[in-house]
Image 1 (tube, rainbow, N blue to C red):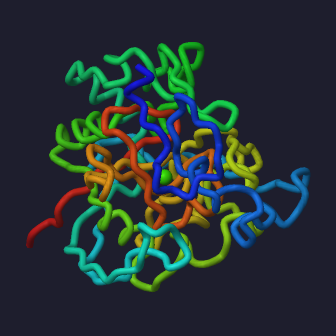
Image 2 (image 1 turned 60 degrees about the vertical axis):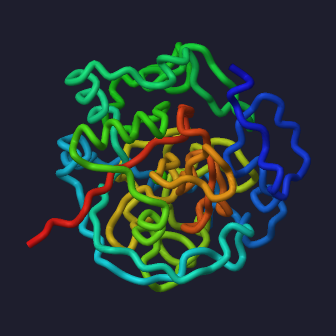
Length: 315
Ligand SMILES: [Ca+2]
């Protein structure tokens, strides 16, 4: 099984972290995700942890638990500058045009995925392979028995977590879920346009750093890369909790909570696909709307989920 896990990206600006059999997601392969990267590691909140009184524990909207088409948001056609001149080499700014499409307002939830499995008998890649990747002690470990019903290992469960985003689903599993509902995964260009719109903002909510006073999502510690309960949830949060982190089109959890699979192959990384958005263990560099990451499409991880897209309704 270890041989199926990719090594670190040889083109990355690796800080020399020993990866072993671990898969890398963003933080461990990029120096700029490490502590000491200046503006990206500003203090997480304006007050001390004891002063936090506004942790988000909102009721989850019914649309996040119902049919996936119930939360589709129309994204108009547009042209934008994709990328970030302050990011990685693969984020070189370039003008891109996107046709109109639709994208789910929320990440796909356990409740939605459970109904899909009940209807179809679908078996996910991690279930077939017998393991899922779990983020433990700042690295990925392949844990036997980790799957979407046991996201962080066989001793964990999704009981009472219908409203959490499903994880431990591969890109293939995500595409199968979307196709069953006559939807599809978004392309990488569509995802970034939905995340930041046309005004060149660095993050989905604007240019304000993630950790300055306002809770904008479910992120990791400013010092790379551990889960952090100060946003209300140690690891995964229910979808739709952080209204201060909305995208220009009203999408929740674009930055953080879980990474999101796209339908796009990753340029220069044969066999790999792109995923976006950062997750509950990442810090601000990886939460930028333009940050790109690549994974093998059959891998399940406890920090990676997805949302589905659709073509526009034709009038
Ligand atoms: Ca997300």
